[in-house]
Length: 230
Image (cartoon, rainbow, N blue to C red):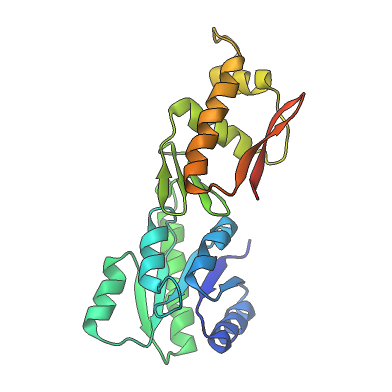
């Protein structure tokens, strides 16, 4: 399986140059040209992120802070800012490495390989089971759901409903099916509670993304995960 690398830099020529070099090494490469694009690409589950510091909109520091709580992969800063303070700041905000522009392609490749090998050695039991879906990240290990860097305050049942629907995108489930899956076959209660829980989930998601619908109602049937349809 190819390892995935996300390159984030507003200089198109540099992005293409790095992409060509890493593609030649057999990596799968994703690209973004400003910080706001990063969140939509996290669903591709990058194994390593190369992140420029100076970009329009969100700069590299802000992007790193925003995503560090929801991704565990190495983040390698790439910047023309050469001061010791800048290098220290890159590590303090959550970066794993800092390379200066202009840079050596051989050194970059070596650093990438070293970080990926370290991740492979540390992978057993240490990386949380994360599910990425666009701007949304679900952490099954800690029962937490994030939209970008914002934690969505879900109850256990609400989280389990989201998790169940999210791992079966666009598949329609009846209230009874959702109730049996989340509460269990032997639970004492009424499947009508599913409707109330989904109303609360929609309200909480809507506070952070009011223009999107994540859980769609299929009238006469039930509900499905709609992936943030506008």
